[in-house]
Length: 142
Image 1 (tube, one colour):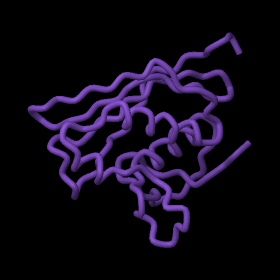
Image 2 (image 1 turned 180 degrees about the vertical axis):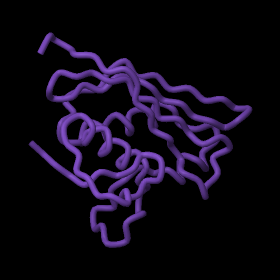
Image 3 (image 1 turned 45 degrees about the vertical axis):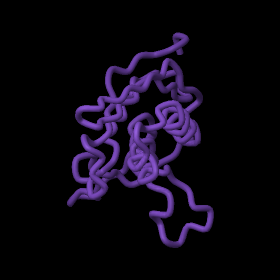
Image 4 (image 1 turned 135 degrees about the vertical axis):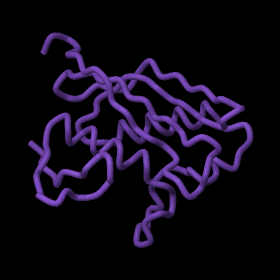
């Protein structure tokens, strides 16, 4: 079983009283971190991992198919994620908000719905995607 430090989802920081996380909570935490990491954001990363968030914000209209595909690929690279499915993407031209949502299946059979909600107007100084998880259910009766 994998264990990691818990990161407060509201602040993105370690809590005052440290704690550990594991299981589906850890997988959700790792998905959130991956979907908020932009290409070239980490100075010492030789592989230049992350999502091209600034490029996406600069492209009008945003490339929805590419965004949705990259978000799913990034989630599938998280240890414990076995599949993604049922994904849709939409763009509201009035607010500039991109919304992607679908299901993610974990290795324990849990399926959770994920919504990656873009920042209205594509403000570069803000977090490009808020990541929200909703109702979990067990897939396959495990």
